[in-house]
Image (tube, rainbow, N blue to C red; front, side, top):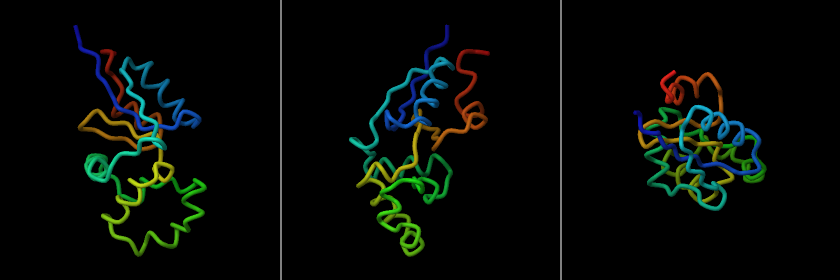
Length: 127
């Protein structure tokens, strides 16, 4: 008998994409531990680890369509920042983080693309 895999999901409950992702993960038989990303954004140490595990450029972690991103004029500011500064910025405001962020402690996905989820999180029910 296989043990159920658990994933931590940094999400915003009112986010439609987050709701779709959570539903998808649950349908795959994964146990989901949701964390409200606005109230409890990952700290800079956790973020640094997650960014590394995701294999993505740090800029892909920014919610570029969000109000805070636009208000802070980050499109113009990010090119002058180094990765450390970007991580610190993301850690201070969960609204800046693209969501959902899903991790099992070794693999990480940012945002929701069904084919990517299938590749990373699919098949947990032995299909």
